[in-house]
Image (cartoon, rainbow, N blue to C red):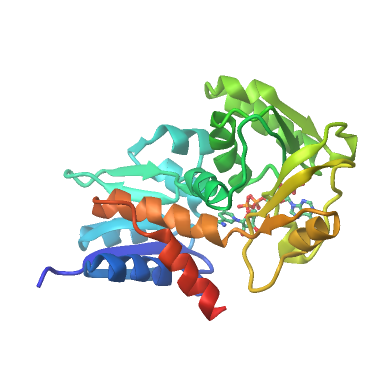
Length: 279
Ligand code: NDP
């Protein structure tokens, strides 16, 4: 029998990570021997832990909080989307042992937005947050050519810096981003609202735009067993379709799995069904 492909995820904390289960289900469905483990590390030990993993036959690894930016500095080469995100969630070794860093978060969100039947193209959307995940998803959202993209962050300077950094990195479309410190300033009906803040983690509400379109949809990047505070807020405001970020997590994992293992993209609907039936 073929030896198991050695995969893993580096983070801190890491014991809560759903990645081993997601990748285990991909491997089971594709009948491939895979061993995917969690690796707890520290900022001081991160580079050494990663180097050791690949020296001992690692085929590929994910990187999660708080190491995504550190991983972008560690690799020899970055994909375009990882360079724009300034963060790496997927490490891929080449034949000479050098690491390529990719970021599959934005692709994960776009794929799941489409799975859910939401639309970005020609729509007016609001993205809350200017942290790591907002940075990863903005280039991919702009690629979909929205009509308007409002970026809202309570620390408005951070959102302004993010916009100018994306432009300085050559993302011309970032010019279109309209930055505000509060959604109450927006005077357009909004069709898609994306929460890329950690507000739901602390159970805090966000100030919503004054007008939501009749068919408005909402997406919280955070995932939980029950609807997040943001999802509840949107439902109360009349949004018919609201979702958490579990689908994004599964889709970004599928992109990583395919990069390491090749072949067809893993079946994410099957994995989503397994998670929903056990929650
Ligand atoms: P960061 O720490 O990089 O950024 C946090 C952002 O949230 C900042 O913009 C911060 O604003 C804002 N914020 C925090 N608390 C509040 C609040 N109470 N009200 C308003 N804004 C607030 O976090 P990430 O971008 O890495 O992660 C954000 C969320 O996305 C997390 O919930 C994470 O779990 C989720 N995520 C999900 C993924 C998935 O696959 N589904 C992938 C990646 C992330 P300020 O600048 O003012 O401090």
